[in-house]
Image 1 (cartoon, rainbow, N blue to C red):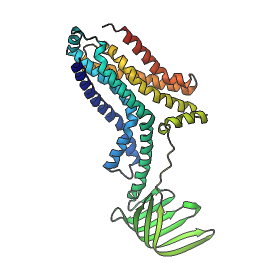
Image 2: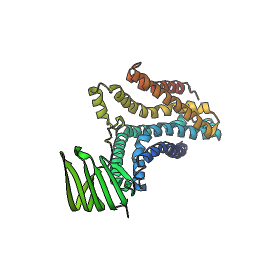
Image 3: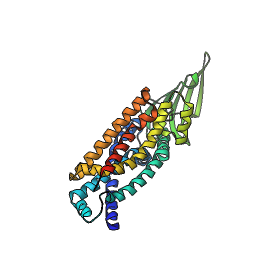
Image 4: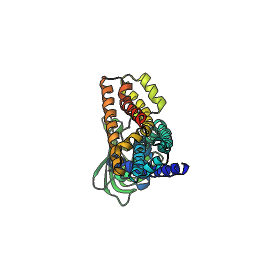
Length: 351
């Protein structure tokens, strides 16, 4: 029996790894499209792109782990039913439910991992993604300065460069500065871009600056003028998905306007790990339903179950936001329905 369980565990893990890689690759495409819009003007290098994709994984895994768990069980046990291995095991004296023992252990591990992702790693990952995006934009903003055009990638500043020999050197620079409620015009023969910690400085050489004070216009000449630049990045408010468990509980108690949204987010984080346990007990009856249809039948049944689950999840959340249902009931509708079905079907298995 240990050899059989070991073989099933190995196949389950293989199917789990392949399924999670496929689903995450599909879901990451949407994230990449959003990132491409953010970095359209400045670009992004492969190491930073790879880091952002890695930081986004926990947010995806809280959705894909329960789905992948069910699909991997259906794929594995669908295959052994198609090859008549299940029939041989049952004829040899192994009860049908006992063949799912490896799936239960993997489901328990998946539950623990999803709890970790849901309450800690996913919020932390989203927060780090936001900070990394702002850092990359600040670092690469100077690369967006193009020659022969009016560049407005910096807050309150318009820059015109006649020639740009390389990424850090500028020639014949004109800057129109409207920050601090005053107008300043700076013209220089040359300019160099310097990055110092979190600041971007433009070192202007051999030029003149014109600025107004009240009703008078002043002019100064300079050999070197250090001009500080701020990327035109709007401050990004912290999203609900970035809040930790304790922050969500605190917001539920203190923020009356968005209390429902915080409750829905909290209950969603609780329900998704529970779905791993439900999937394990729902899988045996679904395998019987899929019959000998093999891998294709397992994939079809698994995707259909989760399509129904997410429809109920969205519908329940909308009812809660509309005030038609309490947030607790609206958030847990799909979990309650799937949990009851899993319990009833599992109890009715007699083989």
